[in-house]
Picture 1 (cartoon, each protein chain N blue to C red):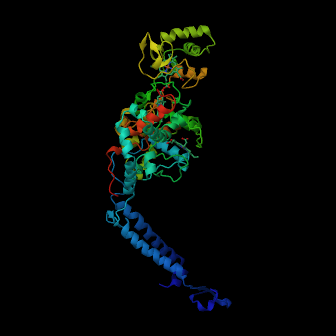
Picture 2: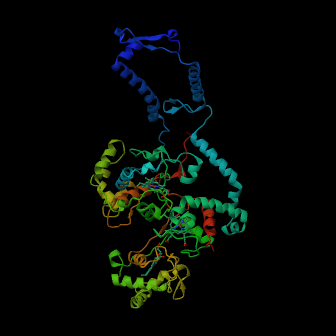
Picture 3: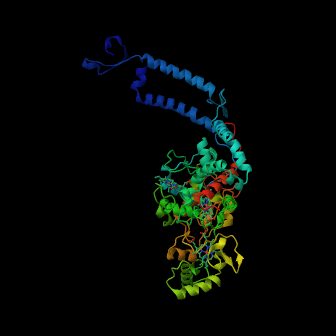
Length: 303
Length: 238
């Protein structure tokens, strides 16, 4: 644009009267730009032929490559599954106990299980399964189990889900006992861990626990939970009632939380993950459940 | 036509610009209304129940979409983490849709049924209670605020004007159905009749005696991505 004389103008003039007409130059486009522009047009035509492009009627041109986003995903998934096929078939066909004995297979399953745990279980059970008091999500790394810590029970827990049914006891919350009785029960439960402040109340609570309230029907005569406890020498139904005599608490160890558990009841929901186990929501296939079972079992408390 | 003619007449230039831009729009958008595969035919889609709809409104009010998408893209990593990719049909009754484009938190398109109501209660009260490293803000007022649903029937009617197939019966019973789903009266059998037997009736917020904003939000979260049964779904050749 150094030499203005060579360039034509658009012929349009503004403010003619001034004597210095303001004009618009009509500069040609730089060559490189122009040819790049033509190249993009040619590329567009090639693209129309290769890929899905033009709408016609109630369909569209499919393109000679037959590419589709969903087909690409399917191929990618198949390829990934094919790579893992041999190990996965081995895992799927072997019982949990057998896998646990084969170290290389076990390590493979545990590392897969760890990823599955992170995406699905950690929000409730915490990173690494350490549990969380808000909402009563149990710690899975200790050997204090509600339902059982052997491989088969863990697998059943994950597949079918569990719902802890601790009934409400206070009249105002739909139970059958008054404030004083709930306080007595709280004192008695605290006495299991030597923390009762009021021996007389604890004694009244003892009578309720083994009598009218029937707590021992779930927590056992000794209060040590449905897994280890007994009632009149009989094993208890597997209702997941926690051990009240140890230092591990689902909903908090302080008297207020314990009173709250007894007064209003608790209902911890462990979702079911098995296919077809529930109508809606995220489900895991049996292989994924096996892997996450082995991972949970490996966290330290596995039996 | 002369360049100068167009350039000197603003109305003419406006009209020609409009025509050109519309051609672009017509070519790109209109065919989607006719192409069969745009919205797949799937079983199970239904309009939101009144309680879920209020929950959706709260989701929008609180700006949850600024951090959460509701759109599982057809990639392997997403399929393995979140489940089947989202279908257009799944946001068929969304006005506006909540696909989003920012993922500070995880995608929520299939969050329904993944966690328990208790988990959502604890999480909305203070996310760090359950996920210590979370950067999600707390929403403690949701459990305190009573849900205002005086205009719920009008909301259903407005949506029916833009094509959501709410029946007169559904609009007329909107308040009853909302109460029934939160288990505070209403007519539970009617709710089931109008929206199907998969609709969960529950005390979503952990306060059995009142209907709070948390009831609505959790009811909404718990149904996301649960309507279409993918066990029988065959991807169309697209």
